[in-house]
Image (cartoon, rainbow, N blue to C red; front, side, top):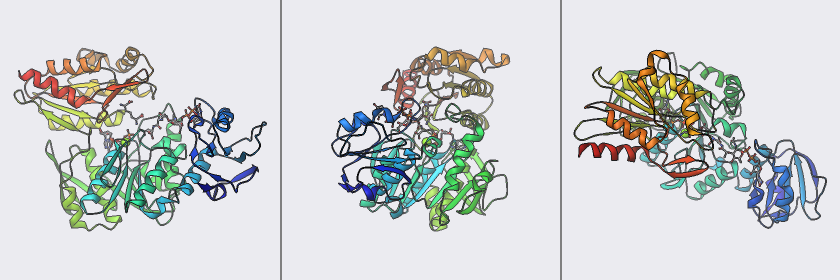
Length: 488
Ligand SMILES: CC(=O)N[C@H]1[C@@H](OP(=O)(O)OP(=O)(O)OC[C@H]2O[C@@H](n3ccc(=O)[nH]c3=O)[C@H](O)[C@@H]2O)O[C@H](CO)[C@@H](O)[C@@H]1O[C@H](C)C(=O)N[C@@H](C)C(=O)N[C@H](CCC(=O)O)C(=O)O
Ligand SMILES: Nc1ncnc2c1ncn2[C@@H]1O[C@H](COP(=O)(O)OP(=O)(O)OP(=O)(O)O)[C@@H](O)[C@H]1O
Ligand SMILES: N[C@H](CCC[C@H](N)C(=O)O)C(=O)O
Ligand SMILES: [Mg+2]
């Protein structure tokens, strides 16, 4: 039990009805989960409005209600608190409830369109290998030291974030690396957290269904840097034109990294092959098993962050050279006889897809075909579909369009929208097989000796979501199975 008044610390209160001296049990923003003596926070969402469920929350036993408008019908014995923004209030309340756990460790947030999971996970692995107890909040999973938990979202809601951070405090975690998504910033999931550093990767097309324009998407990302404290570092990629924008109004100490332009942390690619990258980083040579020039940015960012967090340079260079690629990010298998390479990659944005295809094209020889299997998710930004169709067909020798996670949309219709981006000169490279398993099978059957198959979009995901139902599905396992059948 916690005293309600203490939980409200730093929350800007507009009006109160009832007493704030009561003791509350848990915080909830979903009325269906409210139990006796909980506090219910009513959030105006995109589908429904939490204010409609205040009565249900009270019937379920809520002792306190935090809302943007106190209802006309109030119940005796229940405390109502009016605030301007309930999502923001929830963030402060969650931090207070768990005793501000972000202040008791070094929390580093990674934001940008692509590379967040890669950078956060590599930093988790780097600091763990350096002997620290580390935490991770990422798309793939949540880690508290070596304990792993399933991740539901890239950036969880503020109650979940603070609960994990508290668990990290209890277990003596010193550093936590977390992904900060644009939805997360916009919905104040990361407000009230004390960050020791922020990293910006890059900005390209994604989530334009949610944010009304690219400028709004950019400004949401920028808000994360605007809110960093002066004690934190802000480390940005200045080869991306939006890197400097992120630094415009930040109070944090500014650092830059780049391959092409002047920066505090600079790298040059000396070698780029299927076995990895050889980089020159601030005059030191650095070998990494990670593949593709985009990974040079990720590796440079973790090298810089490690230095800013006080890790010894030689030690971090040594450990970085031992790090493996992250689950579902350029993971590959090679079939035993035909030597067909199948790559599974989480590229689900036009820019990521282009990077992965260019990386493969830089490495493969002209005699080998590049067969790409790709689709786009349903109930997500549909404007990226034709763009990804265009990129896949222009940069591969053959393409099979298929389903990603159709969610509640018609899978055939999504495939048609992807096909719409194909230019006439590429028509004959393209076929469509809506069933993803059949599409992967077809790619394996098409492939000849030494060819390369790219299966993009789902990476580490072990399910396919169709009509709200998640069924087991693992690109890597499936392609491995078909490649083995070919060998028989
Ligand atoms: C678009 C989006 O971000 N939606 C999030 C948002 O939902 P919403 O605004 O639609 O909520 P709503 O359903 O309208 O309901 C409003 C409120 O009423 C409450 N409610 C609803 C019904 C009821 O009976 N009782 C009740 O109290 C809900 O709990 C909610 O608090 O607020 C909810 C509660 O916090 C989130 O669960 C939900 O995430 C949904 C599931 C989602 O899919 N989000 C994705 C898009 C997302 O956040 N993705 C990013 C990754 C992006 C990236 O790759 O960069 C992420 O960080 O994971
Ligand atoms: N620095 C980068 N620049 C461009 N593309 C990248 C970069 N790093 C990774 N990618 C590509 O983007 C894909 C997704 O990478 P990653 O999962 O690290 O990004 P993310 O930002 O966490 O994505 P999400 O928004 O889904 O959480 C990778 O599979 C790869 O194809
Ligand atoms: N974090 C991203 C993941 C997309 C992954 C892709 N497989 C899809 O389902 O669209 C999102 O929620 O938009
Ligand atoms: Mg991620």
